[in-house]
Amino acid sequence: MEFSNKTFLVIDDFQGMRTVLRDILRSMGVNPKLIATAANGNEAITLLAQTRFDGVLCDFNLGHGKNGQQILEEAKYRNLVGPSCAWVMITAEKTADVVMGAAEYQPDAYLLKPITESTLRLRLEKIWAKKSAFIDIDQAVMSHDLLQAIRLCDERLAVDKANAGELLRLKCHLLLVSGEHEQARALCQALLAKRDIPWAQLALARVHIAAGELEEARQMLENLVADNRSYLEAHDWLANVHNAQGDLHKAEEVLEMAARLSPHSVIRQKNLGEVSLQLGKVDKAERAFRKSVALGEHSILKTPDAYLGLARACSAQDNPKEALQVLGSLSKQFEGDDVKVKAMATEGMVHHRAGDTEAARRIAIQLGDTLGQHNGPQVESAAIVEMAELMMVTGEKERAAALLQSEVRNNPDDRILLERIQTVFDTGAMSEEGSALVEASRKEAVQLMNQGVLLARDEQYEEALAAMRDACERLPGNVRVLFNFAHLGMVVMRKTGVEPGLVEEIRQHLQTAHRIAPVEKRYAQLMSQLKALAG
Image (cartoon, rainbow, N blue to C red):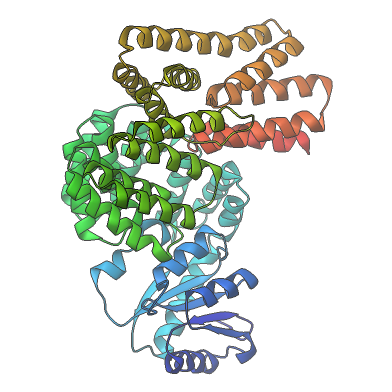
């Protein structure tokens, strides 16, 4: 392989090691002018943002700041490395903590020190040879054209037997993320009929989950974990299933096992903290949240939910002072109106539990005013329910009920969410009234969703579009409404001509739906249709 035109980034905190790696690359024929170096994570991220490198040689241990895994995570998260980039992680010790890492952000290879020219050359040649088979598919994925990526997988499978296993795995992944669950089911079942393949078993379990077949998913995942105890992603999905089935003790047990195998996951520690907190195991929750916060200090994967969880755990242990300090740290670490309102809700509950009812009520009122503003912050349903709970316990019952009704209208078929909403009504001594409001809001949502569809069936397209536009306005978080508007809008334009304003309106609704429900298959299908229609 010709190396003279390849660009490289060498990341190591020791000058001597950077020199050694530069010399090895030069002896392989790399032009010295095409070799950049970085001594720490910040320098590396800056260089990666400026240049698309063909290869990155990154030490795992870099002293203070980001480690090599965290640099890789941020580079991929921010799309700073292209699909053809070969990322080689270099480490002095082959420990389980280092090699297991984060499942989603694995390097292309691990190399143990000391490194020789022949070892590095051979490994890079193998990486690039493999990547060449996937370059067109990766480019389609980066362009968010998942259906095209799936078609390219099929084309490549017809001629590339050497990479058939990886191509099938990638195709299955693409089918899952694009919402083509039945195609994924058929593919996995065909593969598993021949032999046991762990990734195909996990993919089939995910199909079961998407279809609401939780018991089938649980059995499959338990068998998979029993046979593959280091398969961390399977542990995470099994914990999700236990959670959805209401078995928090089993979910906690699975997450604890995964955390022992790979203790440096920011997200898994946060998830463990949330489950433990729900179980009332406050000490355990606090430890997990503290670890998530500490691990996330230099990671792109750090999450405000870990800080919020830690604040709740401190509050539950009658330590409101530290809880408020944690929330103060949160405000310095994260920006965004969504984080601000979630922090306000947590702060209000901290004051409420500490007996400061006036402060709690003041925050509840302020929170209600903020959420009531036009184009207010967009937050997930679970957070909205928590905000409503604060309003309910501080006497702002009317505002709480309005928030909860809105969530019912946006999620009329989400049984678990509806149960949680009913619990908040119960907390405010509104059980019967709340039950009636939930049912009325659910029926209202169904009526709004059906109105435009019925008009379209009668070919009253303009009236149908107006009805669907009204439904989108009143149910801005209802995924089915957003998708139906997009479909109807394209039907109208095929009959009356393309309108740039309507194209943009559809695109925005599709992006909103994708943000709320990223695995819904209609997103990829409708976005592909819109792209073809708009030209």
